Each structure stands twice: as structure tokens, then as C-alpha cells.
Image (cartoon, rainbow, N blue to C red):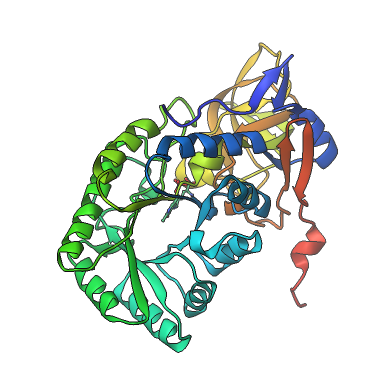
Length: 418
Ligand code: LLP
């Protein structure tokens, strides 16, 4: 089984729907641009993944960075997920929705003292430690707070993953983790300290990875670390394999999680180790769409441009990674086609959602849906050009609910002093 390619977005009698709500009715009620998420797809993504790995003892820690909206975190908590956080802010979000501290892992290459204090005070499951300096700081803060900090070392497994270079993380050229041969010394230090508890071994090799093999290679590498530690009498309880499960944006075959789960089970079946995984995109990516309205259609000698009311400040992925998102009209039926760049209103040539895209021949006022934007969409948005960020709407069956107000220009100026 692969990660879900079917989702809640579909045409019904020529109208584009999220579950039982037409995107046109959402645009009518809440305006554009707006991010729309399907509760059904988020939960079914989680259930599918959970079912697939459920015979391996462990925890699915949703990677909050993919979409950190409180409602989405809350839905996933109720479904049974734990959380992978990478900042004090994400930790605060997870705690705000009532996540058990025991279900929270704290990753990230640059944790500050305040963030470490917050994690220790909350009693999180573990810090995934990325350097000797960080381990030292966790030790001294745990001592100062008279607590115990639970730690895993994030090992850089030196495994290559076929993905965009900006989101590949598991090789020596990357800033992440601790080299395999340096990890044992850190574990020895941790094991000697009364203020640290050695909890596990962690890794994360990158994001949007479609092949199973690099994950299994990475697991093999961290298993070796765990076995060598056990031979020294340092026993870890958890192996954290990170996230990065690739999904379908265009026609990619998504990661075969069932095949991966079989490989994981083969390796972990006879061990007492618990498995933590940190999927982000695989749980929320295909559950979201960005609704935008066509403002103008313009042409020059060489190109057509569809100018829309949303831009790179709302959705960075095309600009940042050259990534593909399907873009469909909210009202189908037009057979006429147009080859066009779909561009936003910002003053940058990099402000595009698609280039030379074969599109339905849209007109000003028409609505478009930019698909598979539930992950790394809103969370990467900015207020560049003093543009208020979009509204966020959650669809549950026949109901559409505003879960975040559209920002206002007045709001954007709050806190500034003339
Ligand atoms: N765990 C760690 C330690 C991570 O760094 C990440 C993602 C994840 C888990 C979750 O990865 P996922 O399952 O979502 O692939 N902005 C980029 C993606 C950056 C991913 C960063 N780390 C994009 O839009 O593609």
C-alpha cells in the first residue's frame, strides 16, 4: 500500500468540492485567498499510516512544522498522535492542545536555552540532540532545574536520499546530526550524568522521499549505533527514524509505506526497541488546497499570464523549490485550453505558482484551487508586500468552519512604532 493518493478534493457536476462543500461556496463566505483543509483526509491519512505500522510498538509523532494549526494538532492528538517539534513555539502549540509531554520529541539543530528549559520543565519524551554543545547545555540546564533531561542523539547516517537538495538532510554536507563515529562518546557522557537519561537514537534523512531503501539503510545505521551502545551497557529504548515520506504532487508514486513497514518489522521485530516516526507532509499535504481568484489574464508576444490574488507570500513552495502543484478551476466544463504562467501580485519575477502550464481557459473572477498545499503551505507564508495572510477553513463533511481569521492590514501594523 502506498500513502493515500485519493483525497477529498474532486469535481461534482462540474463544481470542485472539498468533501461535501464546494470551493465556490467557501470563497463566497470567507473570501480569497483561503486555505481549505479536509478533516476527513487528515484523519484517514493518519489511520492508514497507523494501521500500517501498528504491529511495531511505538509512536507516530506528527511533525508540527508541516502545518501547525491548533485545530489540526488537536485532531491528530485525538486520533492518537504524538508530536515532533522544532522550536519553543511549536512546543507551546503542542502543549496548548493538551498533548501529553510523554508524546513530544524536540528536534532541531539550534535549540536555545529557553527552549531547552521549556522542554525539560514540560517533561518531554526526548530531545533529539544535534551537537556536543547542545548535550552539554541540556545537562547543565537539567542540573540547574533539578530535573532529568531525556536525550537521543540525532545521528547523521550519511545516507543519500533522492529529493530536492534543500530538503535532503542525512549526509555529511548537511548541518544536521552528529557523525556516526562521534555519537558513542556523547552517549557515554550522557550515560554518566545523573541529569540525563539516554532514551534513544534518532535520524532524519530528508523530506519528500519516494523510495523505501534510504529509510531502511538509515534504520540499519542507527541500529548499529544502538547495538554497539548495548555492548557497552548503554541501553536505548527508542529508535526515531524521522519523517520524510513522499507523497503525490504530480504523478509520482508515493512512498510504499507497507513495504517500508515490513522492512522495519524485519529489523525491529525481535528487539525490545520502540519506533518513533515523524511524518508531516504525509498526514496533511493532500488534505489542503489554496483557493485563489483570477484577477487578470494578460498576454505578450511570447507568453500568457494568469494573474491571481495569491502569491509567493501565501505559498512559497513553487518559488523556493520549483515544486509542482496541480491547479484546477473551481468550476469545470471549459474545454478551451491556455498555456500560461500562473503568477501572483507580488513585485518579484519569482512570484509564480506554475510556469507554462496547460490550463483551462480561465477568465477574471474565476476561482482556482492550488492542490496539495496542506503541508508547508500556510506555515511558510509571510506578510511580504504587507499582504495579510489567508483565512484558513476546515471542512468536516458538509460543514465549512473558519479556523483562522484572514489577517488585516491594521493587524499587520500592530506593534510597530512610528
Ligand atoms: N522530522 C524532522 C527532524 C524534520 O526535519 C522534518 C522535516 C520532518 C520530520 C517531517 O518531514 P515530512 O514528513 O513532512 O517530509 N518546506 C519543505 C519541507 C521541509 C522539511 C523539513 N523537515 C517543503 O515544502 O517541501
